[in-house]
Length: 111
Length: 113
Image (cartoon, rainbow over all chains, first blue to last red; front, side, top):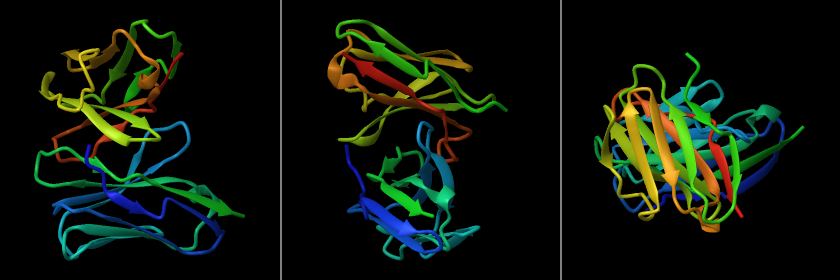
């Protein structure tokens, strides 16, 4: 099935550093979502974006819905060890359509 | 609420055997989704239900896969016969409304030998 292009695939950073990851699509989306998956668990929603240009924060996390509606990014500031996990973007083209997921970004934070 | 409940958490079976995965959605949620996650293909939607009725099963890989939702609190995903390439983590998710947040279960890790 269709997949979003998510980058980077993996990141190794030191505790306290900021992190940025992004997703691009060939399709226009009306919804962008960012999920985090911990080992042995299902994805958990972090941030939802519904309007082009929208910038939303959730604690140390900030995500933006790109103006072109074909991209989104997620920033994590001042990373901590519990930020370790796989981060997925997901997009929806129209109301009621299925979610398309990115390939994921594996984040490792060294204490 | 206990969240989405899936069972079993792990399943190891031999090729050719029938496998049944189970899901209990969050009470009050009217949408239920089955996903499969593999390294090669990532997270893929297999099928979803609205009020127990299958709406979109275009992601079901082939006839060996079937899903049912006999009531609002229970769904099954069955693979018969299973093959090694079916090895993956299978997630169930539920939501209130098709565009609202999907809550994922912990997944079933299936290994077909």
